[in-house]
Image (cartoon, rainbow, N blue to C red; front, side, top):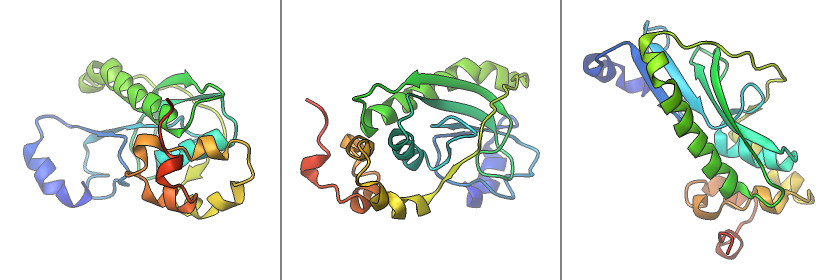
Length: 184
């Protein structure tokens, strides 16, 4: 998207840009262009900033029992803009990566539908999301091996249908085709 600013500028019909579950860090000239940019992030902000797939692994490893998605304004930081809305769901004790990712994607969809009119009309309201800010970038994949003895490790790295999308996680956790199969 960063290299396609001219295309976006030419094709747009309003001043709103949507980014949904996007792994690209938006930068200038898009940031600072005067367009209102909103991201729907698969993760609860500010606690789970960064790559959704890595944040989900770490949420399961941490034994989180609630997760979700966040709609926020995009600023120059990474997932640091003003939070507009959140959609949460429970993580059940037997949920694995695949189930949490699927629920997160569904939550992203709910947020888009619920907030589309307010964003387009320029009237989205802010939600205060207190808590520590944690960033989950690609460097966290290299530390997965240190969690191998964690009782949640198998659940956290059971990528299921997402294993082809996240080969770095599969490789770092030594997942094979036999161990990523979906639940019966």
